[in-house]
Length: 164
Image 1 (tube, rainbow, N blue to C red):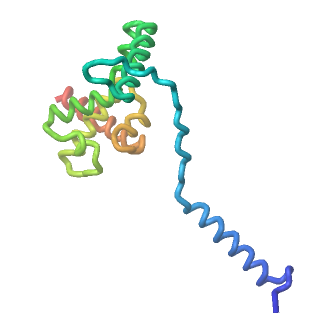
Image 2 (image 1 turned 180 degrees about the vertical axis):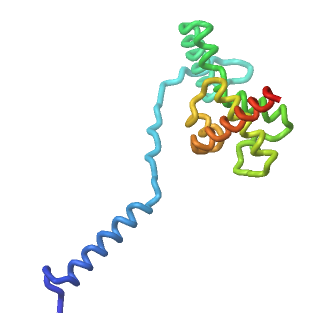
Image 3 (image 1 turned 60 degrees about the vertical axis):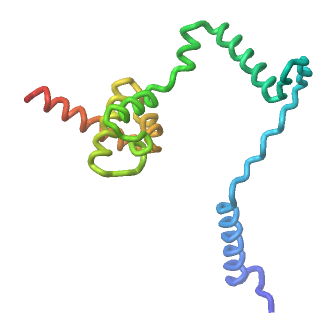
C-alpha cells in the first residue's frame, strides 16, 4: 500500500529525497565551460630562410600590441604595471637574506625558525603599506588575524630592542 500524501511517511520520504538531491548538487564537481576559441585571421608568413610558425607570428603581433599600449601609457605607469607586487619582492628578498627557500617560507611549516622569518616578512609587507588580508593571501591564504599577530609581535620586539 502506498503512503497517502498527508501521511508522515510520505513527508519524511519527500524530505529525504530533496536532501539527497541537494547533497548531490553540492558535491558535484564544478566544471567551468572552456572558453570559446577566438579565431583571428593570420597573415600568411613571408617566405624566409626558415618560415615562422603561426604561434610565433601571433606572439610577435601580441608583443607589438603590448609595446604600443605601454607606449601610450607613459614610462612611469608602464613601469608600475610591470613591477612585481611589493609582497612578492619582499618574500623573495627575505628568503634570500635568511637562506630559506621561498616555498618553505610560504608553506604551512611551523618550526620556530621558519615562523620567525615568515613573521618578519609579513611585518615588512605591512611597513610597505599592504593591507592585512592581501598579505595573508600572498603568504599561503593565511587569515588576516595571523598577519596582525605577526606584525604586532615584530613591532613589540623592535620596541624592546630600542628600549634596551
